[in-house]
Length: 117
Picture (spheres, rainbow, N blue to C red):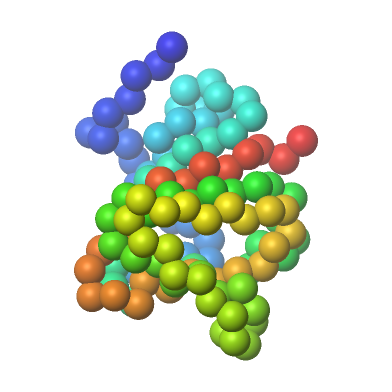
């Protein structure tokens, strides 16, 4: 068992993300978890992640702890899903998406991602 507190987490740069802070709570290096990792992401107003992940073999779950996140499921932004506090969105392998915090408050996400097999 490994206990971790917020004070122990270290920020890292997440590729393709902007105006946000990412911190790994649990994973191979942090706690020895071998099948998945868990992170905490804080997106400033206007922060987000560029279109991507069409080539990612991993499953992802984003659980909104505070604020609101808009997920665009098509490159032309014609289809979107808004996820608020207490809600989660599951993204299957190879599903492309763009994320943007369109509200004027920080969006805090719990992120869960499996490691590729």
